[in-house]
Length: 204
Image 1 (tube, one colour):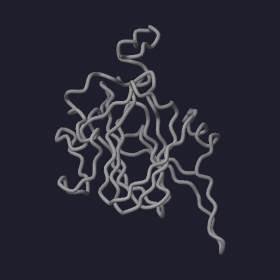
Image 2 (cartoon, rainbow, N blue to C red):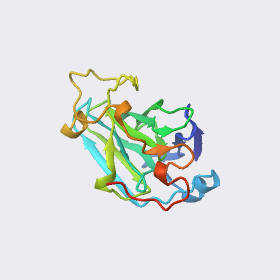
Image 3 (cartoon, rainbow, N blue to C red):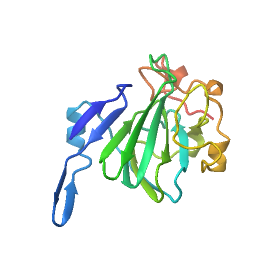
């Protein structure tokens, strides 16, 4: 298993070996020991699976706030996406910047999106299925987002704004500059006000 940092080093591309023969193939797509040897101490607790029927379906940009922030390990089971991670960690040298990686069922790459990042993707072909692991359970009260086409983020989505397929929720996400401070560099798993040493307190 190969783990490669992207232009934002905490976001990583994961490439698993795939062994094929006349029957098809076999691949070990996740190995906890290999992750730990690479310094990635993660405890995945939930698997999510989405299917998007139309090309140009955009899901995002989403994140959960502390103390329910999530690290995501994303891969494509069928089809292709442009996967995007946006750094929301105040004080980070890459705050407000993003990584965009194409993931396909043939390319066999995965993207590791750590806590402190908003995540989203757009489908590049019809009938695309995306599977991702998370290390924190879904917490509706901590479910947040940011506008997918915010000009301050300058994400080059390969889809026309007039043809993008969005949920009502994603069409109404707030602007990047209007987000409160959910994360700070160094400890994105804690609320900003708790970094002085107090126990994490859930936001309302």
